[in-house]
Amino acid sequence: MVTVTKLTKTFHTEGGNVTAVRDMTFTVPDGTFAAIVGKSGSGKSTLLSLLGALDQPTAGTIQVDGQDITKLSDRKLTAYRRSRIGFVFQSYNLVPNLSALENVMLPMEFAGLSARPRRARAASLLEQVGLTPDKHQRRPSRLSGGEQQRVAIARALANQPKLILADEPTGNLDSATGKLIVALLHQLAKTEQTTIIAVTHDLEIARQTDLTLTIADGRLTTSKHAAAA
Image (cartoon, rainbow, N blue to C red):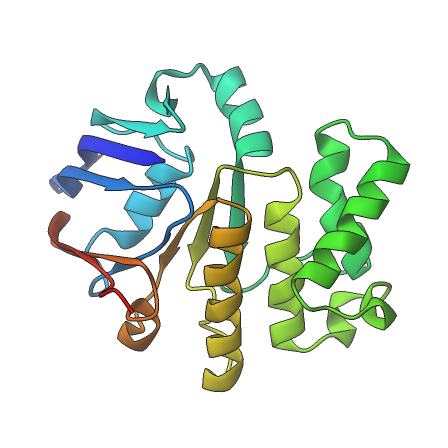
């Protein structure tokens, strides 16, 4: 579970102080696929950076699975990001000279897992996200955009994180492939009991999530759960 309480982030610039996130409070339960939506400049990217422990808030707290990540030292934050948070990016951010399998193995290598179990888990994760075994040894340039994003999602799952953060995960995909990726994220949130929070500008994608957080001018304006089926 992610619990955000009175979160604020102010940047100090030559032109004065700019508050990108203002006094936000919300909760995202385990197994929830949530979307953060808002216009450009509304604070979406800043909020995602704070949730990912890539930046420190000016005030407020962020608890992930009961741990307040705003209180961790730099060393513990690095270890935390490596082992407890997975990231998925619009541009995939795969290592071009590594195969799909090797890309997924990489976070487990950094975490100290030995070669045989990390290879086995990487292969299992790639199959779980729908990448067939004949493509496991291909480099990113030989995969479609949708396939690259599947590899990126498998990599994000590698160290069994409690939280996955996705920055415009369908931004470089056609609408049909984007829908498949959203469905996959939704499924993984449930099967892995992982909290997945995605920033998106696409309201159609947001409507497919369990929870939509709408922000404007750095403030949380609405927090809407999906209607029961």
